[in-house]
Length: 409
Length: 113
Image 1 (cartoon, chains in turn purple, yellow):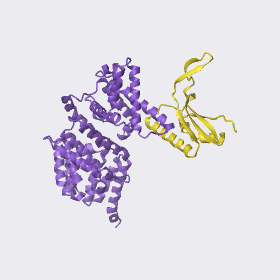
Image 2 (tube, chains in turn orange, brown):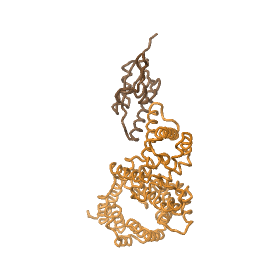
Image 3 (cartoon, one colour):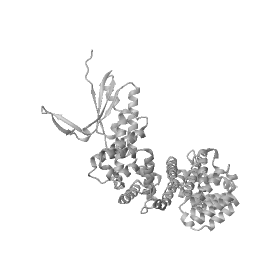
Image 4 (cartoon, chains in turn orange, red):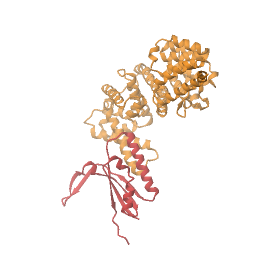
């Protein structure tokens, strides 16, 4: 709704668009308090926002400058009303969302601000919800969003999705922002699993919205959608009774099968072009996992070579760590440990609890429970939320069980 | 059973959407409770904050109401209760108090026959 109103009012009036939506929402809740919630609250709100927008246009036509390309249409009462009606149609709203998505990924905004804006404007997350999702303070998030909206407002115009060159130039930034949004949900540190699933769901929804636009439906976007679906399908099994469950131990019957097959379809369509992006490789890794009935049936050799590929496209310490874990699955814990020792950029993982945890896991499998316990203990000190802490505590206890009896004798 | 009107005053402050949704849920729950217990005659309506005031023989029209925000009637509900005491007791469940609002309980004038 904010996206549509912003197109009508112009991006420099983004605050006005938000006010209109907020106002419609406030009035609706006030009435519902007394009269009960109607059967279709979303449609009700939409109608209320539409009328409110028309009011604002009538009242402030002279006082404000609205979107330059629509200014002329808004001059007359009659065309303004029909423009608003047309703008609230579902087709137009999809386009507006896309336009907004591209506008949020403004070159002058840092990636984290782009993601915050998308969450706030397109997914309707409040500042405090966005702060919660990114584990930052409300104040910091408020500043981040406020600054980003200012940058957006200065550009006066929403991104034009009709120009193919501009579109193609900005598409990678949009893909990247959606990828980060998904990752925040999947790996992020937010303790509340409901928040995390929300983020993943929103990212999947926006990405499939992106696929509906002919320019945006590139092999890379398909690969991005595929990796989100295939990873997202594992979410229900990843958290069991509020506890983290490692991939190896997940109950695979809990995987979301419709999402797996959706991901599979996207994955097949991603193979159309010659270009191989990091999203392709990540989707292929997720696909290999999804196709295996159990951890022991996984083609770990294939996964190691995919990680090799990923390291050549987008190297990072986390990718290297995941690669080392795959090597351990494939060739045993000693080889995995060797890979970890040879990794570059280890110092960047120092605050990442799963770096120590991975070493602990491999030491434990190598039969050195006491050393493993120390690593898990170090990881525990870095845990970012109670779910991680419980997971790591369990691992420490598991290690103690194994070396405990020997100490007593 | 006699009828009483609840006049709601004040209790409106700028709040976050989450808080507002929470408040609405509380109101809905309260209304439902009144209804389930057979006390709700008419859930009533919320009122706009602005309006006009007419007064005097000249029927002068001014913008109003002039009262302070906390004194402006923001809505009403009609309930049925055994007596004023029960009507007051029932009003204590109103979520408006969490927002420092006021409930005025007034018996609706009736002639018993």
